[in-house]
Length: 410
Image 1 (cartoon, rainbow, N blue to C red):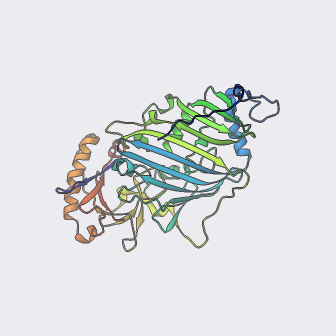
Image 2: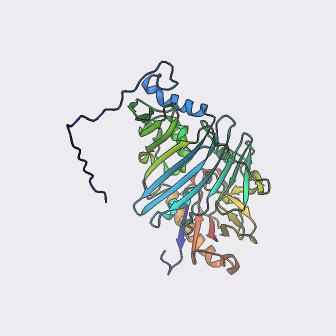
Image 3: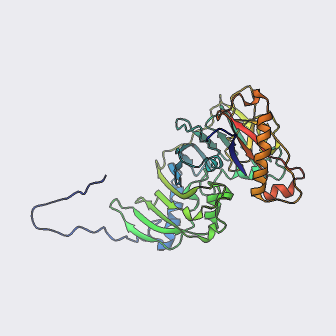
């Protein structure tokens, strides 16, 4: 768990359109009823099976270009993750960019938990990159000058249980080589209604159901930001397909899956909407990591933040959904943050998240005050600092308990 604190003294028209025509009135033509050709790969299927058949027809097109927006809504503003890229279904390859736009009133703690977005840096001119092939997942954060390469399932340093390796592998989808798009759940639909479109395509209104929805949302939202009964909820889905049966768009509102209490990892977020569009079928070849670019082995560069030392520097952009992981950085180069303390936390039995948060706040406040001035010189938030504390599983697993106190440096 993580949060931020500050020392004393710091505050942290549409118009109606009327149409008239001369001559005898005639009733408006109705769209043609959906036909069920015995040979069409999608429209000949049973109605409730057509969304899944459209997914298969999409993948049969070999490659496509995609754009997806994920909108997290809060009372004070929205945070939007826009992903664009190219998919090679047949070759298992993809490349894409991921850019965040964070509203001024969006909760800072939630922003930090969502892909390590720092609300003090609301830039939209830079984006993270992912390049995926059958052997590797390559990630470059929006601020880094290097790529992280995750190969196979090699455990990361300080991660003997392999949790981070699983997280890296999860960047690769099951239905598409680039994970996190609605393509992952278009096969998990319930009863559907169909509407014929003038261009020969179809629009389907259905619902998302099942465990696949939970797995999909966990690739976008930290587990601590989801309700326990994610897979028990039915989420509305609207998808359109072209006359060939290939998906052109899909959108859903999954706000019911968001945990909205004070203990939620994305506290303050009330709504979550996702929209995906696809085009460029058959003419969208993914790119590769440029040969001249710097590449680091993710298994060596990425560590749990609990394995850092006071005075050390880190980058937060790992590409993984586990926000407790960081990249070890050279303090002489540009970096995202600096560790100002790793003070011990007291107690034998797990005291609860609230008690641990309060204790971490106190010990990190002291660590921040006592840290050398050189460590705090690059603080972009003046006298403010961030800190993390162990969750219940980590508390029971580890014999030594400590908070991690750090500042943001760019």
